Length: 214
Length: 247
View (cartoon, helix red, strand yellow):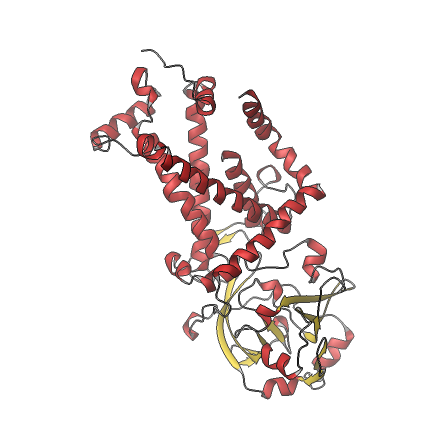
């Protein structure tokens, strides 16, 4: 999933290279007011797929991997609902959402004090909030705002353009969600590294986790 | 378990270099290309055949409708037509039709028009809203009595990219869509040269490069294989843009 999202981000940046200006509303082109106006081809080769300017190839990558991403998300959601991963591990427990509890968790993260013992076996509340936000808010918003950029989809499902307030607004929201997703990936990887990368990655893949002691 | 971990490590390490190499692999590009057919089938599945692109009001018009691609076909032939105010410009309709036509552009201008204010979406990402006046393509195809063998409509244009003529093509679902028109006017005036004078295509459920400008010939064909590079359009042949540009 992570690799897929990175392919989407990098091919997406190449597509944005073709017209690196973002607008609000239904229309927006060179003579209209842009809230983000970059010059030339602003995203360098190491950040894009492919690495040299090629809108056609970037669109092929982006639109093909979008299918893989959507399929993966649907399978993940189906399996995770069926084996109760979502209900058991991701939905915050009663009491976890109290401001005090969240504040304590923010302080613990800021001091890089990671949970030990029994608490380390569960997602903490900041993890739960961010995972739920990514799975149920950011990625669905990415998919819907992406579809809204399709003229054929707008004809078939006119509510899409209304949902985002116009095609160019949808394009802006698509970019902002991508930026939020990138921020999530960076913070997530940083936390994995800080919390002990070998132990964490092993637990993600195999489920074997060495519980940190006090 | 090791294989999966190794897969992830190798995947992320090789991502940067690997993507370019994959992009150069014919087999991999073939896999990527198969997504175009999937997208087209899926979009057609959820689209009623005549689902209309949204039409806007005068208040929504872009203050300036930018042009893209060719803004002035550089041929002497086109310069002559421009000097004559397109008085001798004709659109021929041929190929798989029972009654080939050669329609003077004045006739296209005087036939009953459909007027539509729609959003034009460029493959690059920008959008502009314009008002288009034109004859439904379905009327022209009916007048030419399209053969049941015809599957695609090809538009041959007066503009050249180097020595290559611009052309585009659509299938019959889009050709007979009520908003698919041969536009001769824009924003209440005759079509300006940068936007395709004297006649251009509007195919509102697809991206801008499908909207062929400077149309001189409309050809009905069974297959796109025999037309120029065989992929159905100038950009499709030369830079691998999708033939189906609904997204």
